[in-house]
Length: 408
Image (cartoon, rainbow, N blue to C red; front, top):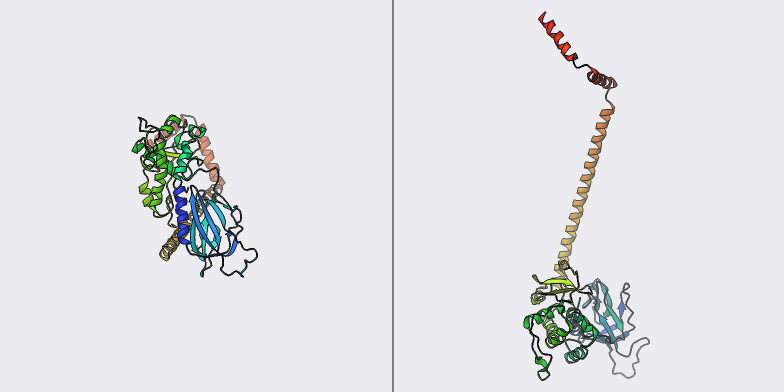
């Protein structure tokens, strides 16, 4: 699912594609979406975006006219509105032509230009959500990437919280303290902590000492509370720097379904990498790691079977060249489906003909048995009866009679 880097990249995409673009009219929602309507309509407005952890906020700002006599039409929105998005498992933004809307575009903003374009919130699995007039969720902590000082202070000042009694791999998914970290980031952060060892100071805050390093640099994935406290300096720094590495890669970040996934895949050192171990934590989430899982690992936890990622050809590139490639791919897929259906039909017809032939043969055999002449049947039965009751010496007497006749 999208994590902090992916949501930040999405906000950068919106700001880039919508810079100077004037939107107009109401915000429209798809019929199947259960999210709330966005009560905003304006003759002309701009859209900007900003991210914080696992949330993105779009700000819709009406364009004010310089003419004092021009009044706002009835029903038009005069003040800016913030719409806060949470992406769920598959959300993202895309700007396309109106006749090229993505299939799962559940919230749409229309431009004023001709031909009209549409900024869509696309969510195939519909786990994402939006909140009109929304604010950042108060239960979420500071952003790991762009509020590092506040994030660090929030964690260090709450180490006595019972949340830190849990295994470190589960603590990292607690958005109250680690807003923006998800499954792949926790695996990469913990793996890099093991590789790089532990330092007694955070280079970003050299004047501020942190906990003393511990002797064992091989940190178990599910370590205890005391080790979490001792390692907090290095761990928190990596919680800040590792997500920024993903942002610097560009593109969309973690998106295994796009056709060119090689850059991000090459960056991964632990998550879904061959040779790494995996198991489910207490929450049922899969954690990838190397070495000993630690004393707090769930008992009888089995490693889930690795699933092959089905890479789709559609990487949301809507250029003409990509459109032609996509259409050609669709045509070849349709032909393959038709051929497969035709082959199945021929096989089915062959099976039906074979069954009919076998049934006809059985019927013919039964007819022959029924039509056997009765006198032949009786004669055969009589001979069988005589042979069964004939004395043992009968055959010898017949043989001797035949011998005397021949001698005469």
